[in-house]
Length: 245
Ligand code: ZN
Image (cartoon, rainbow, N blue to C red; front, top):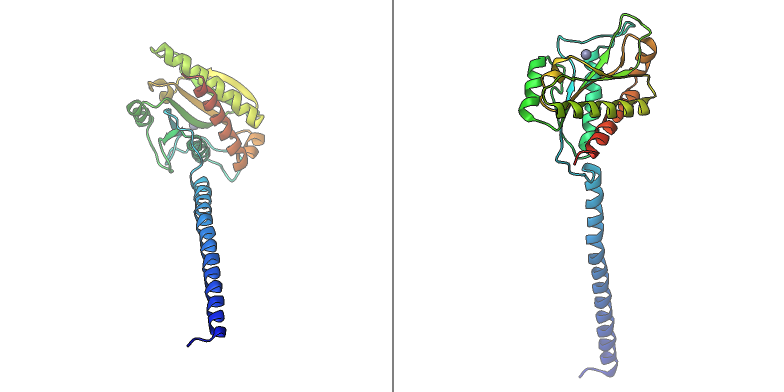
C-alpha cells in the first residue's frame, strides 16, 4: 500500500513535471516563432548584400571601351605612361557596374585588353539593337593646355529620330559628367567616328579628358575620380532614359 507521504510526493512530482513540460513547450514555441523571423531577416539581409533591389528596365545598353590590345589609343606624356585603352576599360567597367545596379541590361564590346576592330564593334551594336550605345575614350592634343570633356554624336544619319536621340543623350551625359567632376566642358560636338556613324541606335562617344594635359592626367590617375566620371555618365544615361516613354 502506498503511503500518504508517497502519494503527496507523486502528486507534487506530477505537477512539477507538467509545469516543466508546459514551460518547455512555451520555450520551444517561442524559439520556433523566433527562428523563422531570424532566418527571414538573415535571408533578406543576405539578399540585400548580394543582389540590391533592382529596378527592372527593359532598356539595354552597350558600353564600348575604346581601343585595346595592340591599339593603345593615346598615352600620357609624363612617365609612367598611362595608356588610353586602360583608362577606357576601367571607366567602362565602373559604368557597367553602376548601370547593372540600377537594373539595366549591359553588354560591353570588350571586357579585357584585346583588340576589336571598329567594324566589329558596330556590328555587335547593330545585331543586338540596344536602347543606346556609349563609347568611352580619353583625349590627346598637341597643345598641352587642352583639357576638358567633350561628347560626340553623328548628325548625318538618315534616321533623324536617331540623330535627335543621340544629341539629347550627348547633352544629358556631358551635363552630368561636368556636374560630377567639375571638369571643363568642351561641349557637345558632331563627330565622324565609325562607331557612332555606322551604328543604327542612338550613339555617343565620350572623351573623358586629355591625357596630354598634366593637370587633367593627375586627376585621371585616381580611380576615385574615374568612378565619379563614370557616375556622371550613368546619371546622364538615367536622365535620358527617364524621358523615354
Ligand atoms: Zn580613343
